[in-house]
Image (cartoon, rainbow, N blue to C red):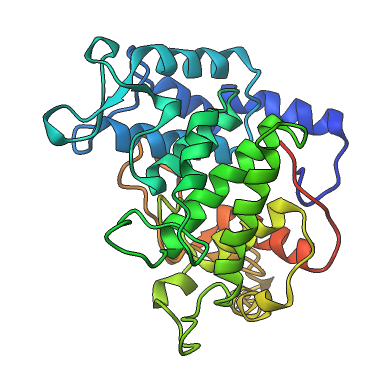
Length: 315
C-alpha cells in the first residue's frame, strides 16, 4: 500500500494500526513468552527471537502500537545476551550481559539486533559504533573476521540493513550520522563493485543461491534483498545494478493459459525460490516453488524505484 499505491499518510497509518491485531502480526505477538523471548523446542532462544522480530519488522507494524511497545519492553527487561559456558545465548537478566538490543559478538547477528532496536525505538549507539569499527578494508563485514579479511555478502547485507535503520532512527543531525553514512557507502560499494552477485576477480556468479529469491531470508543474501535495501536508501539506481535488475525481471512469471483465460494466480508474480523459516515461531504461509506475495511486493517496489517513481521509503 505504502510502496506501490501512493496512498495517503492517513490511509497508511490506518492500515499499519491493524497489523498487531490481524494476521501475521497478531500471531507473532501472541507467541511471545513471558520472559520476552520467542522460542521453539528445536532452536536456541536467540535464533528464534531474532528472526521472528525481523519478520515483525518486515510487516511494517507501527512501533507505537501498545501491543508492540509492550512486547519490546518485555524483551528488553527479560533477556540478556551472555556467553556463559562458552556459548552466546539469551538468558535471564540475573545472569548478566547485554540487553537484546545491545547485541552479542557476531556482526551478522548484531546487524539484525541493530535493525530491530532502531525500528522499535531502542537504537543502541554502542552497537552501531561497534559495527562501524568492525568494517573490513574491502568495505564489507564478515562474521569470521579477523580470521578472514575478506567480506561476506551475507554479513554485509545484515549490517547494512541495521545501519540504515539506525541512521533513520537517530536522524541526520546526530553526531554519529555522518560516520554511519560513510560506513554504509563503503558497504554499498562492496556490493556494487560486484554487480550485487558476481566475483570481483572474474565476474562470475559468486554463488547460484544469490539469484534465488528467499523469504524470510534469515541471514542469507540474494539480489532481491540487496536491491530492496538500495531502494530503501532513496538513492537513484546505480548503473551497476542493471544485471541484477535484469535477473529479477526475468524471474517474473509469464501468463499461463487456462480454461476461461489467464491464470491470474501466477500472472505477473514472482515465485518463492527458498524459505529460511526453520527458526520462526509462526508460519509465513508460502511454499517454495509457489507464487509469493512477499517476493512480489518487494520485486514490484524495486522495479518501481528503478523506473524512478519513488524516493526513500520511510517507516
